[in-house]
Image (cartoon, rainbow, N blue to C red):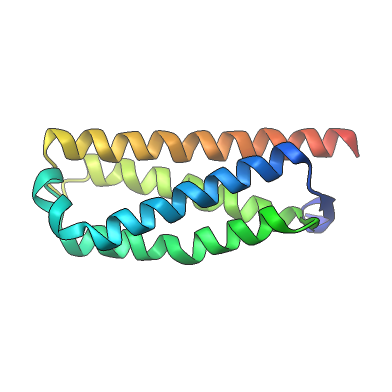
Length: 136
């Protein structure tokens, strides 16, 4: 666990990935929070679910943006972002197969697409972190 707590110098590639993650999280936050009433019938998902999901992205997007703008950070902070992204993907997939909601076709496509994007961010962040570790 010692390696996780150590500091790391942000590389340009990790910084860009984190900025993109923060920007898409913030955009999704705004979309889900302010358009939940419009999206709910189209997606077959509850407007409360959409608003809560959207609002939960606000602190995440702020934290990721903070990391992207810092000169250095702890490995634990980047791992926290990766793990939060992984949990989001798992929760999205569970929403689709768990029977808690009855999404429309568009709802399935929306949830699957955003889970795919978040999964890609998690993978890119993981790869960037491994490259930094290999250089150290």
